[in-house]
Length: 407
Image (cartoon, rainbow, N blue to C red; front, side):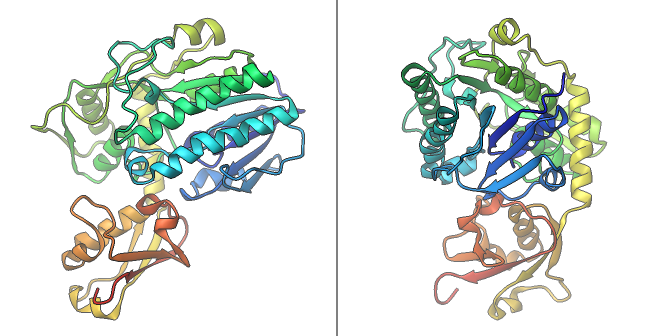
């Protein structure tokens, strides 16, 4: 691809998994890149590398608040959104605000500067699909009040508002619908299936498969970013599916991960096939309009992802715990209140596994933070960050304090 030294691309959500990969690819082709991100989900290691680049700028900002942006931009790519089923269920208001108000704010930047804007929707707009594979003309089967409705309806609104700006204000908009994307840079605390399986295998644990024949569309991040850039360079309105057209059975994925990592075991559970709707994209439109289709073999992608996660685990943050003096009697003799972890969740799981008497005071049986305890990262309550999924980098102190008297 030829260098485009005059390009200036604005990427909302640019500090996330997909965002950091996209920013790196745009810098490699010669563009100036500004990432806008609230950083509530933490700071990925890739962000530190990006910030060393002279053509990269990070603006810490919540896109649900209008951004006073005056510099010309060639294109806007709107990726900002909470992700993950647990986070969406816990924070449906934040999720809906990002998809609605955040989308309007991103569209307004593109409108003011007459620039191309690509917005990232989701395969979740198809809901629990009644047709396989999903073609873009399929309107979906979505429950507007279900547990994932905050995310699904946010993305459906995102698409509707984007098309409204195209029709009413003649903004050059494009909509993509990504399916499952994976690759290097995913964290061990990421509970999406590829990262969760690799993290378990690296820890020598069981990979429990409920519904081994259920399938997922798994697209490698490098392939996905190429499709995203191709959409940015086109004038296509979309929506256009971006994903792997061949589904991968969850049972096969688990066996492949164990074989690739070299540790871990696979156990088929007794539960019925659950864990999300099965979706596979029809990518005929992406092939015909963008000349795009994924090309990375699953074996190669899983190997690269596992190597990356292994390296990150070896360089995890050192976490020191500060707990109330009243709790010290519950801590086994000789137990050091220090571990290495990449997220608040993994740190607290380590603490409660090692000090079972503390578990009821910190985590519920479902693994969520109990309401009568607050956890602070420096001066920030993690409930005001990204909860248990808050990413940890560098040496940190986690302080646990009872929220109620007598805790």
